[in-house]
Image 1 (cartoon, rainbow, N blue to C red):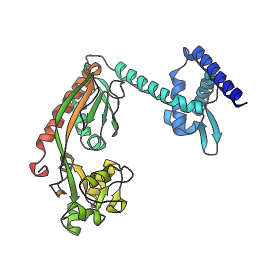
Image 2 (cartoon, helix red, strand yellow):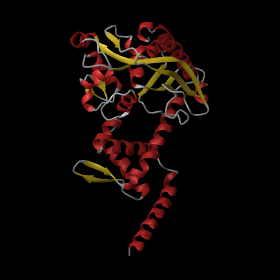
Image 3 (tube, rainbow, N blue to C red):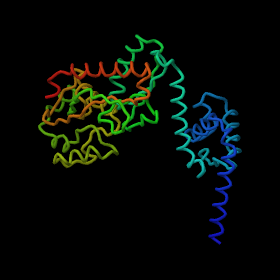
Image 4 (cartoon, rainbow, N blue to C red):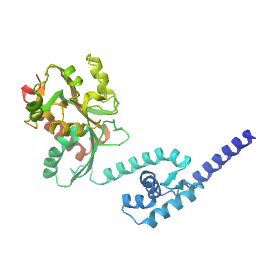
Amino acid sequence: MWQDIRLDAIGQKRRLAVRFRMSIDHLDWALCRSFLAIVRGGSLSAAARRLGVAHPTVRRHLDALESALGAPLFVRSPSGLVPTELAEDLKATAEAMEVGAEAFVRTASAEREAVAGTVRITAMELWGAEVLPPILAALQTMHPRLTFELTLTRQTEDLLRREADIAVRMAKPAQDDLIARRIGPVSAGLYAHETWLARHGVPASLRQLADRGQLVGFDRNPAVLRALTRMGVAADRGSFAFRSDNDLAQLAAIRAGMGVGICHAPIAARDARLVRVLPAIDTRLDLWLAASTTVRAAARVRATFDALARDLGRILAETPPSTIT
């Protein structure tokens, strides 16, 4: 009996694959775009808001896609639309199509030799939010037809698949066929706001900070705990006065005087009220820029890449020596 059920399920999948192949030549990207919006929003109305279209349009797109596939993609529940197993299987492929569509639009948005169009940049949270916007604003003043898309993430986006045009990273890119430029070394250490120091005094050791629960950082990502362990400091969640794995949130907490946390020296140097403590604790990383050789040939990407390399290099060179001892 169970074998018959399995064989019937396999047959259904094969028939579905045949129907899908028969209709794929006429599949509209707009249908897949609506499908992704429903997956992410959990309802037709949420998807319509995300896409900026009418509710009936999303409903029509879903009906057309399910008709082309010959199978349902969602089931209704009290909490909204729940993806079926087929929808879960298709999600990654639809996301890859989305990346390709966005890359297509960026490439088509400008003439090849004109410094115009859209450049997509991926960067770490701190550098993307604190450092890059003024650089991009100055470049946009010089080239008003330039527009920028900025993704703030710790994840390494695939430049060869055109998930981004340029990456700002704290590690040398490992992929082949990338243009990579080392900008320079970046020091990272422990910082506290002057108001925190006025209340608590200068800490004598990292162990003291951990024992008194005065650190800023770790929530769910165990990397900080592993680093403290390597330094011989036993720590747990109680060692942190403020817990977040988001770098921007950690910096905000340090600035608010909530505790002592790790920050990159060029970022900390932007606020004179941040003071480096325990300077013997120092981590050196290299700042890198990367772009694929294909998009680097486009004038808009080349101009942005060169401006970032120049201005980021200047920022590293201008970091006060007292912050990197």
